[in-house]
Length: 306
Image 1 (cartoon, rainbow, N blue to C red):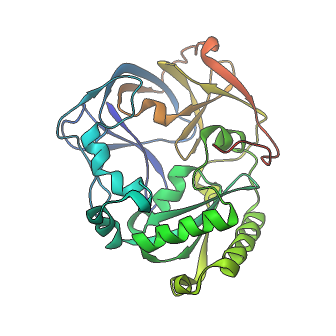
Image 2: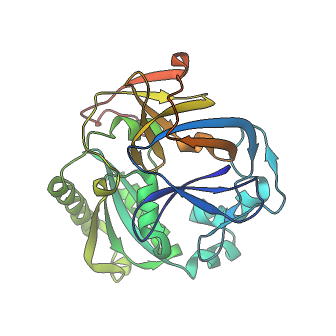
């Protein structure tokens, strides 16, 4: 299968693999991932463009050019990356037609909480609001505005600059904080305190877009998180990995291997590759020389977030 990434369902909050049977041929399909399943993943070195998102439905569209990519490149060809540019480029460098794309779409501003003390501000298209927060792997979220995409990004940038809240969090920070999550009550309290700080500094022209009641989402309920761990092994440069699925957190796949080690695989490393997944197969050994031991922190205050 041609791996197009993990897809978090916006309605039932469950993760699945998004793929096509062959690179950029046929229909986009979905394969459910369940905690407790034993899987073996083989990753081919060949890499192909993962396509782009439709406007305005955010459905995956296949690359028209069926582009093959260098193994160490990004997961999109120049054409598909340009098509998606309105979705991620800063407002200041968007062209007029790109601004019009997001200006006609309903968006929400949110605050994400990773671990107990890492905050991120962001925007999500209304049609994929829950998909957005779950694919990032945040432990809890608070939606607080509804407006068009241009205004939402203006609010996001204002909050980031004036409250020093990050607009992106790196993978290592997410891994280290993965089991250091707050209780539902603690997460709600922290996010509402941050929301109060936003209200204090938010310009009047933006307050008309505030929700009457911010929407709190405790994402732990959907990540299969139960037992807490102290050590995790990050899998890099691996073309064969197997184990029992323990957790799926955003784009991170956590497996327990045949040596009872907890492995984490950043699914972005598989984007665009042809992969083969065998379920309920015998464990295959994972090369220990390609594993990086990470001590999971109980306090994330000193982590570098970029």
